Amino acid sequence: MAVQTTSDIIQKEYQTLNLGSTHPATHGIFQNVLKMDGEIIVSAEPTIGYIHRAFEKLAERRPYGQITPITDRLNYCSSPINNMGWHMTVEKLAGIKLPKRVEYLRVIVMELARIADHIICNSVIGVDSGAMTGFLYVFQYREHIYEIYEELCGARLTTNIGRIGGMERDFSQTAWLKIEKLLEELPKGLKEFENLLARNRIFMDRTIKCGPISAERALAYSFTGPNLRAAGVDYDVRVMNPYSSYEEFDFIIPIGTNGDTYDRFMVREQEMWESMSIIKQAIQKLDKLEDKTSIHADVPEFYLPPKDEVYNNMEALIYHFKIVMGETEVPKGEVYHCVEGGNGELGYYLVSDGGRTPYRLHMRRPCFIYYQAYPEMIKGAMLSDAILTMSSMNVIAGELDA
Image 1 (cartoon, helix red, strand yellow):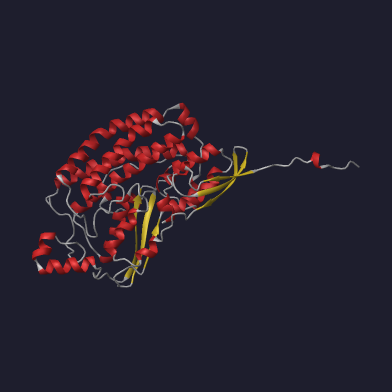
Image 2 (cartoon, helix red, strand yellow):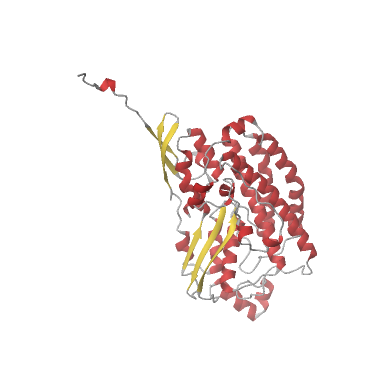
């Protein structure tokens, strides 16, 4: 009988690689400990929480109006959607009905934010596949959108835009001109960006079948947004649970088939075209309204009065003081409200005990939910594909960790 020696036994040797937590390719502060067989990923273990800031606990110590800047820091690539989702949640609890004009103005701002979010994601996918030109070219349009934010609220990245009950101020003439300029110039730029990448052989080879996920697995992980639609599931909060009068708008929900990086890229690309269409429709609807001035609902207990009234009117001064100090009465109850954020269903579960601050606030962050699928999506792939897959999922560290 032959004796088996150690030289006869082929032993597999694996390497451990840290992807993150501060590697520039990870698009944020999160870590993946990869088990590697050469260039092939055998398994991955994600670690999150590096920038956890206890937003939900902070919200339990702040008056309702002062929670808005906390929501900015979730998905900071599309801050206004976060802001307005929170405002709608409080309005739902308080039973506040907004004028049509306010809802249309909100739609314009939220769709601008969606375009800005998708510009970042898709241009970064291009960079991570080796194409820098598209990123440098298309980023100017994101800058134009930030200039519009700046005109509306004075901020660019973390906007704190709008208020509970409506908008903080009306759109200036300069803001309308900037929106008009964007709608005129962006289609040409977006088309040129697509010409650079959409049918580019190198880009297609890098992204098709890269990081795929089936519709069944995406639903099992509770995917929403572009990542779910890329897998072939036709779900969009704007259609399924309309808010801000979205049911009045005509737009297509783009869906993919394979749930891979290429499909995620193309879904976001098409969504930008649909967002431009929605903005144009909203402007047309505004023009047809008889109401040309309303910027908020008739809720003085939530909306700060104009400064000249505060200085000269006792009642206005009282309301200003009560709002700033958080003395506004909010009904007892619990509500859940969600909006279609840049990355999917962004929801707020609010519990009120009638006090000056929420008893409990939970934020449903789409990034936190779909990032759980990342190890499964990159298993068996090469390291370079893992970077592309992460880019196409659009994992935003601020939203992931909260």
